[in-house]
Length: 211
Image (tube, rainbow, N blue to C red; front, side):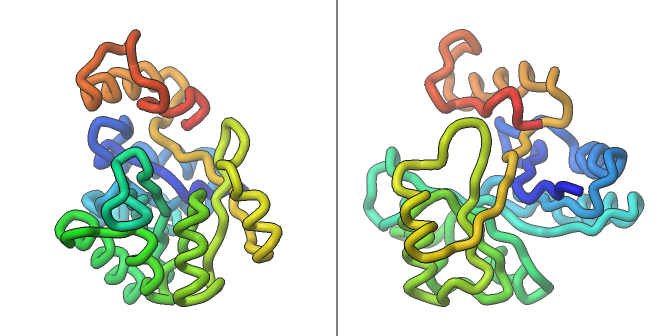
């Protein structure tokens, strides 16, 4: 059974729409043996997630999707992202430290920070700069190129994967539980970008398929 490894609750502020408990129950209903909660730049739902997963008999995978410039000083338009999944308690601690650095460290660079990430953290990324940095640091252990739908992979990713023989993982970047929740997601995106639903900037909202 498919396991969602990139899943956002309403703790991904002004993006995710679902309660943690509802996400867990939805995954359990369709027979998923596990679920990863990877809210953007935060682990605010970790305790709630642990309790809900225990009640549902689901294996919880704790993590976060962290964004930021691949290189310190890059303009905002060149932001990168990576999904960090804790393999154990030590990995959870390192994910917490990466998130803290993302919020507080001056000149934060996602690629530089993940170069020194713990081997107890699994890293998924669509960004070639991030993948290259991690390879030059801790090496290929538990590093995966993330393939998301819809649309083709980012430019240069396929060639990089072939050259370095990196394994790939397919995710769906879940932001809502049911297809009809896309309207709510778009409303949140409009609030985040200070615009209207009908004039959302390109890329401001996720695909209708991210449920």
